[in-house]
Length: 83
Image (cartoon, rainbow, N blue to C red):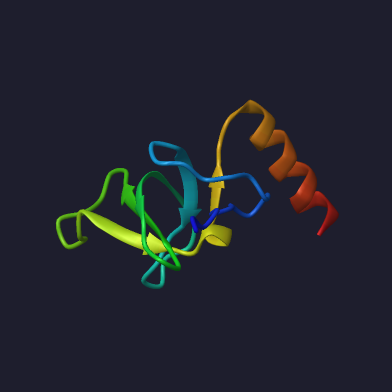
């Protein structure tokens, strides 16, 4: 049985998707990343523009990611306005 991983907006996540995730380690903001794989519970991502102290890949829960494209940008804006 394969697990479907979904992002914050309920979209299916696939390897190679460009996503936005939150900044960690006390920083605030968002970062670009690319989905590179899956674990039984989490999504493995490669962060864009990492610093020399960060690992090559990290994991996030699917609901902590948003697949980005024109339609997704609009949907995210609407969701933020409603909340």
